[in-house]
Length: 354
Ligand SMILES: [Zn+2]
Image 1: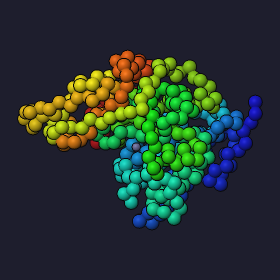
Image 2: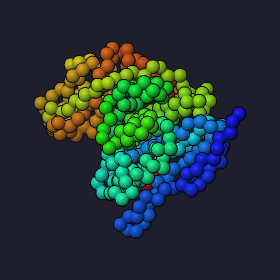
Image 3: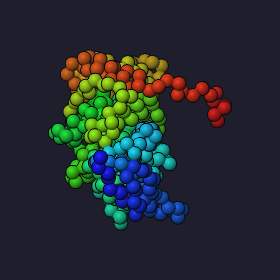
Image 4: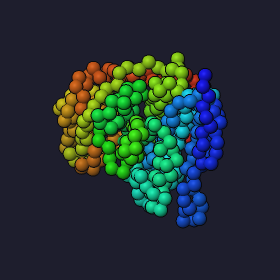
């Protein structure tokens, strides 16, 4: 068995088969406090690729933070081939204020490549890119829906890249969406420099849910197994074949009022099928939202108070939605069945918690 070389990062030398936490200073804040980006490096005993997993690039999209906490417990550098860099919170500023953005009101995921002499977002993008992304051949960046929205666990990849399709299939989330990349996004910048990237979308902002966390932990582990970095684990559930789409549509509310949803994420829908009804304050004059395509609901609003024009459903256009819907059911059941029971804590009364 070949042994890996030490991994040098932030002036530290990390020996093969060990892990270390490193912190990259970002900038000083208005109050004079310094801030830094926390990265855990798991450096495998055997040589192999370097892969990063990042979360909360939008500071309120914290589902990936929970995924990374689980990965930090489960991955063992002594049995790993290659190196895994874990970034539980990329946008440290938005994370503490429960915000998507930074204090300079910029979106970190539109600020790449950034620069050392740039805005706060630019400085953070620059450090994250140089110290983490540029050292890796693959990255998995985990997002959630915005606040008051839920996304079915899904993988988004750049269109027309067979390598990414292969990795996305290995991840095994219920749905894979191929779409063009946005200028200034982490994926756009990574692609320009030959770093493959998978973007996972799952769950709701500022919330944790079991399906999203399990899908993330299992998906990342499956990708690492596909790359030969970890042993394919017996504990992983056998997943079905993810559905693939390259077109999605948003369905907006035809009026302001109160929504009664009929469909939710994961449901198959046919063109013309009712998704929800929005009525006035007394329940009068209900108007129906219908699906404009055959497809699968991949995201929905969870807040029933809606204005005219609010985007309430996100639907991936897919042929044979019922068949795909059954597949999605079996994937989500397999993912949820893999978690050992008994980890749930006893329920506390509200006043015990507060
Ligand atoms: Zn996001």
